[in-house]
Image (cartoon, rainbow, N blue to C red):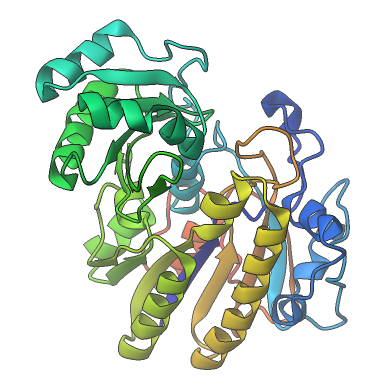
Length: 393
């Protein structure tokens, strides 16, 4: 008996009720992507009930090419984020049962973004100078400052609209181990604010053609309370993560992790775990939607990624038993047609494959933490502090 949470990172389904507070009125990740490419063809997700979700949402818009079906194969619903923020950690922690009411610290975008005291701590501890010190796209700032970093051996430090302190370094000139050590120093220094993540951003190449590598690592804060991962582990249930989730949860409450940085590897790892294990909880993130296409405002790439995932979903569903639980959702939006390069505050879809749910409307869920509560009820362990299970007869 397996429970799987599959997070399609950034696949939102329409502006949230509080989108105005985040500057995200008009953000509809799935719908705007579909319009930008002349419609989506997602037969598996459509059969699961994806096209039926927009009609549940106030002001919901249809997804061009993904129609409602009379009898969806899965339960379908939409979830509203209750926590403050629209970042990766906040979304995943809420899925895991938390409610973050005091948002993480966000640095100002203009140079200098980071306080002098914070920069001095990092420079003194690492012996390297910091350059950049502003909000920027990672690919852009590497092209801007990569040549200087190679010459003087500095760190490129930058932030974004999320609560992040990012350190970029060329792998051929600064060893990965040294970059990770610098991030550990920054992680401790950033806890005073508090900052959600410190991110190692290694890259390689030559000026004019720098490319980030897949040796990224996230140094996250410890979750402030027990997550569903902790609770399952404390009750003797094996927990496994795929993708970047080991970093997102600070490696806590995880029996086995498969750290990968792209969808293809995550798909292969998930299939391997499904084939090898029973009586486990598997938490998976598909990162490419967000990292490769959402932030880079590439609707064509986003649509192609959805199509690839749709093919994968057909294979995954064939591997599962009706007694298993599969919950497909997201952590926030990232509309690739929207202004800027940041996440968008949106409803997220919920598709649930389980014998109790076929064709059932799961309605509007006020809180991503309903997923954690449902996992707790699935494994018959004590309930989480918040949320309502959608696994009811």
